[in-house]
Image (cartoon, rainbow, N blue to C red):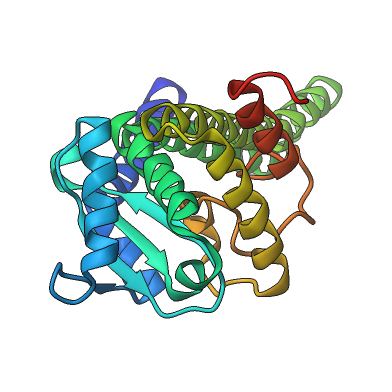
Length: 262
């Protein structure tokens, strides 16, 4: 419905929406989690820890925020390294030791250095355009089926349109989630290399996974992919439709970087 013009409209609408989300990603994420800024005077230990990992990653010092939540977690956001922000919950500070928290900060700085906010915005734009085209196909099938011309051929077209309308957004979502999981694996690897503590990151991920299961965090679904572990459902989500790869696989890959298990 709408031909090439419909495709352009869907793409432009998705582009505008996701560009806004990309440009204001830090404000949106911090607002949804009710995070508050932390200065060096407020928390010198946390500030120095983040500064250390930023230096090791060769990145500018990001803004540091804290979230008042017992659920242990952390995330990074920002449209580029010069406008980056890292946030940690009060729960993660109580759960992890210094090496583990440093490795988590290295993981978050890896997201910043790897431009994952930009990558996921591009992916979300394409997925959003596909979803809009699928919605157009649904309307086309519904209203196109009201005419009385060429019943058999029209019925076949309607079935085809409905199949496309249903399958397209599902496939787009699966691809988007698969890319999100791949970025987590890459951030794990990059963070382990810059921090020099793959075992500490593996240990931290296991602790955070257990903590997220026991104390899920109240956060909007669209923001869940930002966190180092899923803050909503822990390990109960289907692997195919999860924003995060399985923690056991992440830990296994990290430990393999330290050499073979004894």
